[in-house]
Image (cartoon, rainbow over all chains, first blue to last red; front, side, top):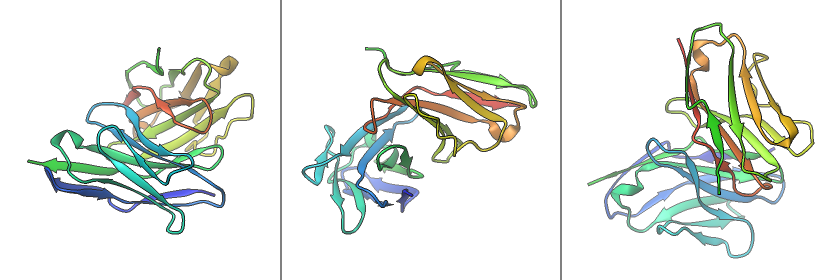
Length: 111
Length: 112
C-alpha cells in the first residue's frame, strides 16, 4: 500500500524568503511523484513531477523538488517566494495504478 | 484542446434528495478519478476507473455513493439520500495513464 504524508498543514512565510514544503511517502514499488497546486478559487493543476532520470525536477515558476529514495521524500522548495505563490500545495504518489494525494500544505506568503 | 469539464458547477439540494454529478474527461484518457474536497481538508479519493477494468471503489464512504463510466468516457457520480456531511466540492480528474492527472473545475454540492 502507498501513503503520502505532508508534514505541515500551513506554512506562513514572508515575501522573498525561501520556503520548503515537506512530503514523505511510503510504497513497496517504484513510484512516480507529483506536486500539484491549487490557487485560491481555482482548480488543481500540476506543478512538477518526477517520473525517472534526474532526481531534481523544476517548474517554470521557480519551484524545485528532489526525489530522495533513501529518505522516501520529495520536498518542494523555492529560494524566494512571491505573494502570488500563496496557494495550497498537494504532494501525490503513483505506484502503478491509483494515485494517492497528501492532505495538502497551505502556503501563505506575507508582504 | 478541451479540458475536463464537470456539471453542474454548483448544486444545492435538500437533505434526503438524490443528486447526480457529471464528468466529461479529456478524450482518449483511459483513467478517471473522483475525489471529494471538504472545506479546509485535503483530497479524499472516492473511485477510480481504468479502461475496461473493474473500478476501484475503495474510497466510497458509504453505499449511498455510486459511480458509472459509460463507454469509457463520461462518468456520473450519484449520491442517494444526501446528508449534510456530503456537502463538499467533488472533483473529477482524467489521465492518459498513471502520469499527470488533469482536474476539472469541480462541482460544489451544498446539502441543506
